[in-house]
Length: 426
Image (cartoon, rainbow, N blue to C red; front, side, top):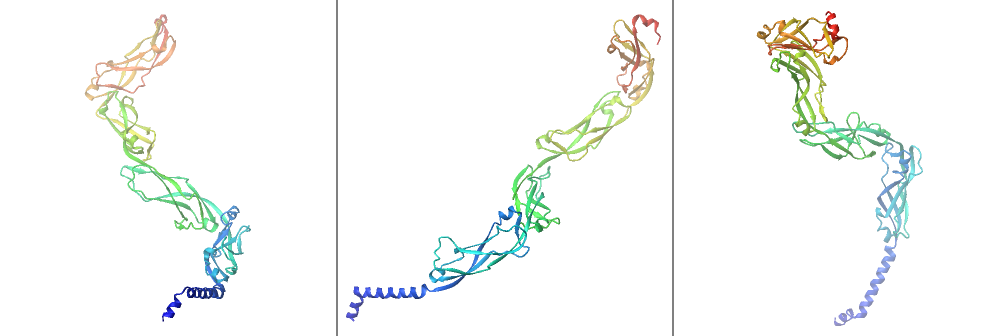
């Protein structure tokens, strides 16, 4: 036993054993590892050369109308076990060359498979690939511009209003197989914002819909641009009263007038700061002395800058009726001519004039023709000769509570030189 232990622990014994093991490993490598073998590797992705540049330049594209195109290829290789056993799908490149295609239709093209560069494949060969030919269907590429529309699913704060959403751009270009592109009716952007009280901006993708509102897959389409910018305009709204200014006259005060305006209120939209300063809109003025009992007038509705009338009316009808007063017609010959130019005289051709007066009944009953005085100021005629129609002012002496209705009280005078005055008769 001692002798055996001595032998196994000796240096010479260990050297001999190492040599034996090395010889056995050599025999193993020679007779097993370096044996030739075959192996099939699947899932190698296929690259289609020219699909995204050359074909597009020729307005062509790969279509799936003839069936889904092959995306991967399998290869069978033969060679030394030590190399073949280490190969994976990443060890290969596969491609189909489309650069020679110039027309539409179906065509079978060879699928080329090679080892990746700088990979040690000495003594290893590709003996089979599946599929060897790839069927490719080529269609004509078409393009189409479609409108961008909104799908607003949010809400607006009370007292505010959302105006139509603004898109930039407001159309997008869809390119792809005609069978798909022809079905696209419009692009839709979904915006979901809540309780808005100011403008909102953003950028969003969009969906493509057909005329019935069904979504169309974008997988085989090219979109330009892929996103659009949007602005959601939010404006304040406010109900504003319409009104008119009344000019007192003809014996009528503002308190004697009943005013009816149709519409009486309109709704405005615009910037909050602008609307906050608007409490009513003035349509214009109505002179109470210009009519006897009532008048109806139409006014355009004025709008401040940057404000929109969302009610839609552009005009308002105003009716003013005088209540509690009476009218009376008097013929007076109490006509005064004043301010004739020096050396000139005026002869009244109009000897009397009918005047309409208005006021409280108890006052109007007291007024007689002699209380009404018509005054014509001739200063505007200068040194003119001949007959002229002259504007007048009508006064009711002693009864300030009453007034004259209307303003058409012109009279006709004849201007002569002063020394001819005695020779002229009215």
